[in-house]
Image 1: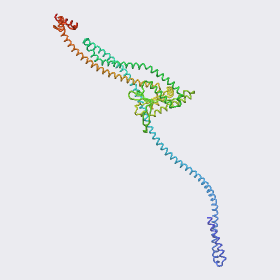
Image 2 (image 1 turned 90 degrees about the horizontal axis):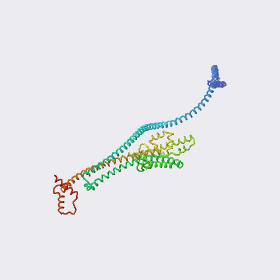
Image 3 (image 1 turned 60 degrees about the horizontal axis):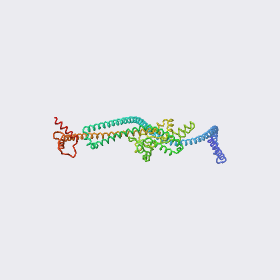
Image 4 (image 1 turned 120 degrees about the horizontal axis):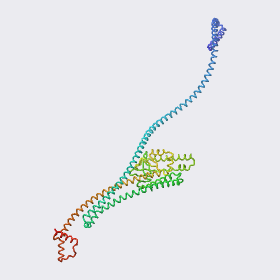
Length: 525
């Protein structure tokens, strides 16, 4: 509005100036008059414009005030805008950081999602494995119960077999005695019936017939005597073996102390020493190397990736039923030695914990070998882990009795020289009873063969008796012709001799007497 007033005043000035120029010019005086006539209108217009100008000035004042106010607002808004820009930049940086972080978080989320999926898969596998382990635990529990039942059954079977063997031996002894008596009675009866003369004549033939039977009886008697002698030796050696077990245990404990310094820190030497102790226990058990047990036998086995590797158990003990028991020696010495020499209780507890941890490591290592994969060995469901130092075993299991259960879950049974020797003694007795059963079977088979031969002998004796009876009849007939009846050959020969016919050798006197007796009896009749 103010600008409009200024423009109007400027135009009015131009008009006045223009009129002034026109007035000075005569040629324009007419127009001046016309303009003068128009002047009131112009003044009125000017006043109106001045009024408008005043209004405009007032409005300008108001506008100026408003302008200052607006400038102040503009300045304040500019500051606020600047601050807002700064905040916006800060927020933009924060948004950028958040976007970067969001991108990083998205990557992490993706990675976590993948990890989550992998963990879910592993969890499922672990759950399945857990179920399998539970099933294996149940199976092992059942196997343990079955083994205990089988052990009780085996012990009862062994006792029954031993009793049966004793009964068979007694029965065979009675049979031998009875057969001997029957044979003697039969022989005596035959010899008594057939006469001393025929016995002497057939002595050689009868001896040839009886000799095989006599040999069988002697062999049978020797077999029975051997069984008795073997049984007596086994019983007599039991106390010696117990004493030997005690002495062996004492000796090994003494050697363990003496070798502690030499073995300490050398795991290879410790392992070699453990194998030596194991072999000594095997030798002391009465089992034979190369027959009932083998040591350091190499086998080839394949792992999960079909890689072939060589496995060498320390010892394999064979059972009569074709099964095998694998034994591996593990020596835990360093921490145990430190435990025995520790002065304070805290040190003892520290070294004892290390000793128990070392045993756990041995159990895990032995379990990882998977000896059951050896196709050449018909192994039982468990492996024997041999600890040669008895005291090291006792102190560990007294402090942590869960070791045995942990080992059993991994199908490992921990043994010491004492318990191993007792186990080997049981195996040796199993072999002994197996041998006794085999001997009893052999004795039964031989007795059967002997009885068959005896039956044949009786049949031969019966045939011989018939032949002897026939020979006796022939003899009696010939003797009758010699000695009986009138004009028998003996009496005629005597009469000829009485008539002067001499023989180079006289007739046997008993034959002559019998002939005379027969003749006199005939005349009496």
